[in-house]
Image (cartoon, rainbow, N blue to C red; front, side, top):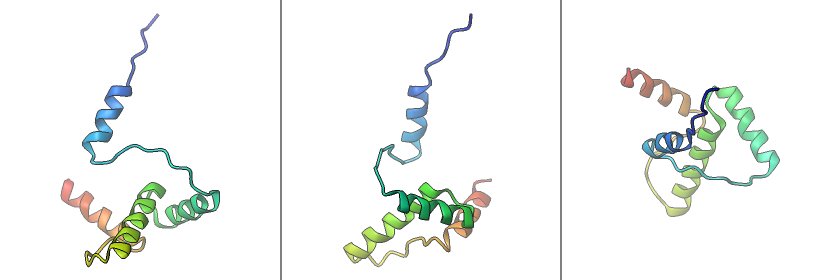
Length: 86
């Protein structure tokens, strides 16, 4: 019989080290469908696209002049980051 290993702490450490916070949000089904469709069309994860959309909304409301990612530019930025990380 093999002992099962609790990976909860290890997963939490991975999440914390990425600068992301794990959260549970209840979103309308049509919004999730929209972001998943965009994810399929762009090849970018739907959670990444939701994050970019939220950042853009915050920048718009706060009047920030920071150039933020758009759904259209995100795939290119991710490719560039992947190249620089290699």
